[in-house]
Amino acid sequence: MVDLDAAIGYVVAHGDAVDRARLAWLRTGQFPPADVLEKAEIGQSPDGGWPALWGADVASVDATCFRLSELDDLGAIDRPAARRALAWLGRSQRPDGMWEEDASLAGIAPPWAQPGDDEAKLYLTTNAAYWMVVGGPNNGDDQHATRVARAAEAFRASMRPDGSWPSFLVAGWLGCAVLFHLGWFYESAQIQVALADRVPRMTPADTASLFAALRRVRMSSDDLLLTAARKRLSETQRSDGGWESDDGVQFNVHTTLTAIRALR
Image (tube, rainbow, N blue to C red):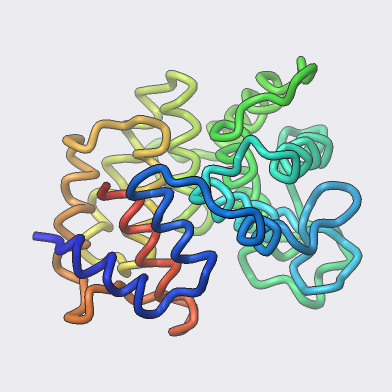
């Protein structure tokens, strides 16, 4: 069994003001104070995205999606900063329905976001489409549904007959979430079967991210895949109540918050 009280205690003990505000929103729906929201939204580029590095000029699809995930945990997905970011994502979609980082980021982008890399392009496409699904259309944006559908078609076209996909693991559950939301249940189920085989070996961070993403699009927590994910989280929770990040101890609180979002 997952110990949610211990997880909450871990965030309180180790998180900063933004982390604790995210916890308050996830637990009770308490809206954060203005200074916390300003801190969470700081650094946004004039075009609406967020750069990968502080003070940089070029917005990043990956960094913008990460920031949207934090704002969603603060109940701030409908605030102007998030709406501008979602509008920027829409404008940044390529004619083929996919997303790719700006070529100027090739020297600093991580492997999963490298410009010119097909696996990275597919991951960024599922990530951007997922957040457009979660965020919903901006007022007056009559292209929103078309953009999401084009991204879903691009992902579906990449799928292999066995339900696997030629990209990073995370692209699987983000693409699954988009397809599930759009009613492509057969393709979504194929991916769920493929992911269920991987869950027993997944890291805590991947498990929490998978669980939270699919619950966010209203997949039942009784689904076979999510039941397996819950079991995996119970197996990997640490004695201090937290879960370990794949990106260093500084992200352990973020991983724990993601698990809390999934399990609440």
